[in-house]
Length: 493
Image (cartoon, rainbow, N blue to C red; front, side):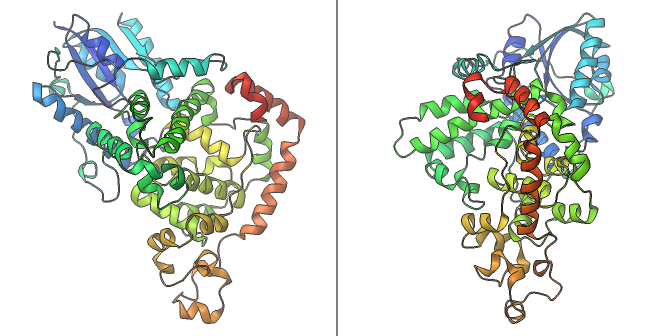
């Protein structure tokens, strides 16, 4: 029976800067590149067809590179333990190599079960850090220095040409997989997965698009071109954060880019910061970061299915909110400010529990990353007790960041004839103006689901009064002690 190593691919779908792959190939045993399509994740409410399509595109891109030397990724379907059991019947598994996954509760439980199974079968599991995230870190002492060390470490070339790789006969193993037609489509407006496009996207940013990054980052229209657009490639591991950071450093002296690169550098650092928060306190998938906010949500938040459906479908009657949600449905992307505004509108203006919308946006974000999604969602919902409470006014956001109405007009054809500034508050139009600009008498934009000013006032009173409570402050101190480096704790308050 042949002895092999397995490289278990998860959110690291690349063939460069891949420590598990590097270590496996350095072993004396041949290596199998393995990706497992798990029914558990196919059924998970955070995932949607757009994620699996991106994953499949990423795997095909890897196969295109590997095919030069007659290799490919082996894709199996089933639970991890069932797939490993099937492989073990035909091979002697020496060891498994993988990155640590900063994932959902279900993947953490799966990893614990897998670890127990591997120990029972005397198979070593080598896990390596994901970026600069430290497994089980209880505080941030020395964290920034660690981040800098990891990000500046040498990127070793992986020699695929002389690699000893084995391809599994997944059909013979009884775990083969055929992707559904929806995974094979190329959706217009939706980014395509794979390392090849990740590198093209990054190179284009540093050669051309990035000059406007720092001044266009808040615009829902301009950001589509001026932002890096690397987030899905980082989320699914088509390119590593270290590769992006070191590429940034190589371009530090390029004329006209400095302000953009300073802004981008800080965001790469925050990327790991939020993932570390989730790694260190993964319970926030289910509860508030600041546990003292749970009673507030139980007492004050409402669950109105009609309101929630309007938010999800982009039919609230608030132009910028609806334009952002519809854009997400079609493209999987909007910029950070608009994401924050969507969460704020749900939790503040509509007074809903953040948990009511967290999986919906996860399904829509092509770059869904659990470690970023949950801490950010709660920060925008105002339930951390340590961050500034931001209640976004969607009318003001539209006036400032879509002043010509380009974004709203693109995604809300019902308002195609409405000019600015009437476009931002169409419910204030006169009867004559609604006829002139061809709005139907029953248009939702003449009667939005909430009064923005009144709901914002209620949210401010609700959140700021609660934040003054002793238990919120005590819990906030705990949050700071665990998730903020000492020099920044006073600033975070």
